Image 1 (cartoon, helix red, strand yellow):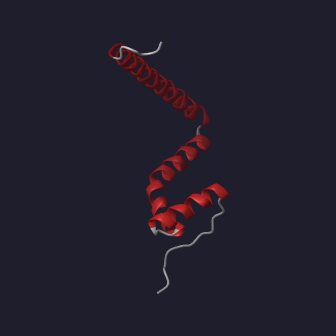
Image 2 (cartoon, rainbow, N blue to C red):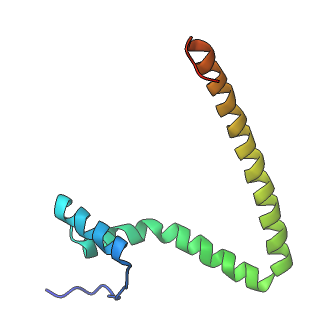
Image 3 (cartoon, helix red, strand yellow):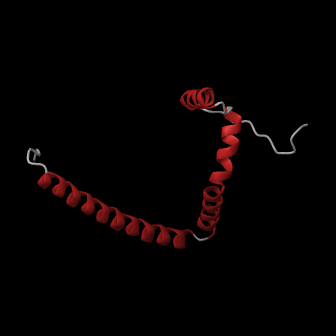
Length: 101
């Protein structure tokens, strides 16, 4: 029985095709089925990105201000994570008698 779902054709690079074929061979899941299962999981990201693009077109200055704040927030979070990693490295080195400097 034919499906009522919409169909689209996609073009992929050789490496993507090879990965899909290898996955299909090992899992028994055809590439089209895998892609059909992955796309709905990406839908929230697609919708939020679409909304962001719409907002950017309608209010470029406000969008740039929001992006600036988000980048600053992300940078601060990344710095905190890096500090945590440095502290963990120091602990591991301190616990290992033969640790290199």
